Length: 204
Image (tube, rainbow, N blue to C red; front, side, top):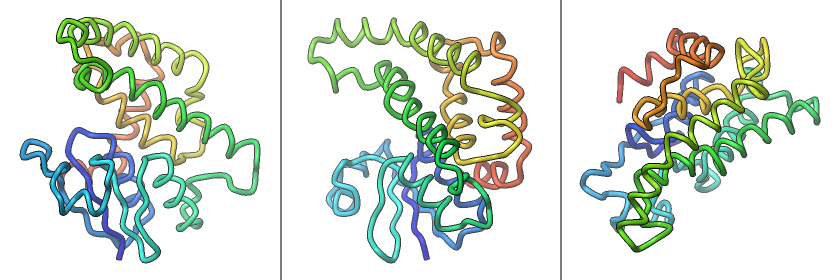
């Protein structure tokens, strides 16, 4: 059985949704960030990075959201969550996952974890002030050039969708009004209506 280590409000939601979507036999293990469980010895033995998600498989442990999402899609091909028979289409999905993880998620993190990049508290405050601007710019680009609609890659639901949904749910807390992103709001509504998403959110 697969074992997913997750924390509410984190990017692990994307992997959680994907596992539920494909009907995987898995166990979800909550990591309590308020008690700093991610930094304790037991969890660091699973993921030395001290972050979530981490997916325990019968062959070892996988970390990083894009890797876990891709693993789920490949391990459960009948769910058709990625176009593995089309090199270009699959590369486009990978490009989108990469943008979310390397740019959008980092823009969000600057508002909460500035100590990763600077020691001066004044620098942390400067980073927090910049978050809304940067997140708006990221989602403006997504709205205009990446989100085809109704799902990220068009008509077909894919591993890109739970990841976008997860990060899009952070917009309001980052000070961004999403009303200017109609395709994004439609996507968020479609995702919320999916049974897999509802089941995961109900258990958090």
